[in-house]
Length: 202
Length: 202
Image 1 (cartoon, each protein chain N blue to C red):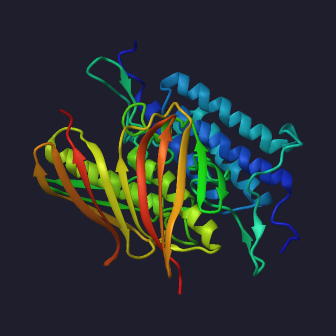
Image 2 (spheres, rainbow over the protein chains, first blue to last red):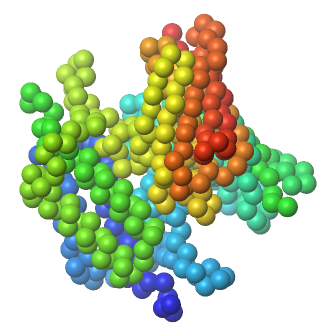
């Protein structure tokens, strides 16, 4: 096994490729016909150019999510589908964790997250709240726990075109049970609320 | 405006490109370093070859989700992030709807949906249940309604490597309120349950 899972330049290239896939995912839902072909050709050419000569990428850039080694010496890639820059699916939350509270910002989100026209898909509203509540529970306890329930209430549609704030708070700890709640806001509007129960492993 | 939003060949090409992005999304989480560069080069070359000469794609193939025209004459692309073959994010449910019941199959799901190691991210468990319950409510009522609540209970981790079944049932209709419930299964194991309330527009 190599001393490092990959070079920094390769990690930067991997995240660049994930970014190209995100742009393609958006373009596939924004364009049709010849316009789409041109768009895909241009993005694909950008990727091939970077693969042929990684030095064309900003050399000072640092990867957000480089692979690391586990305690057992295995290479571990951050696969998280909400936060990892290497995962094409991830809307890329920026999160601050403090004691019993997490506050994350995300968006504006592109078309691939659309449910109703111009609005975030309800399932992905849940994805954002699930992640932030899990994170605040993890941060408070210092270890991973299992999500047992997540109850979502949708107050109003979530606009794709706006930056969103997702907040989570630990409200109670009772033995192996941890309770948390939170909400997703667009500006001052609370669009969705969540509350749930997390259970620590024995 | 053209008579059609794009040719059938272009729609097939678009879904092929979405498939390449899905494969890249998976590869970015499976490979590192030189192996990843080779993988991305090969996928990128496949896309460029198809863009240069769409006839290299299977000519008899029909697109799953070609753009269509709305009643007002606008081109509408199916952006659904769970079901549309044109959306890179979509795990691509196959769904059967009958009266008050929907049964969908999905997977095995690739690495980009991973939460705990080898398991589906809890937020995406919710995505699958949200979509199937929304669909069965829509099918029963014949019109769209707003998800008001979705309560998820996680019984056991959902393996990525298995085909999954997602079932939804309408349980009660009371004026503008429609109640539904369902579960996600891996084989005979119920991994997660959902129940919720949908409200019809006035």
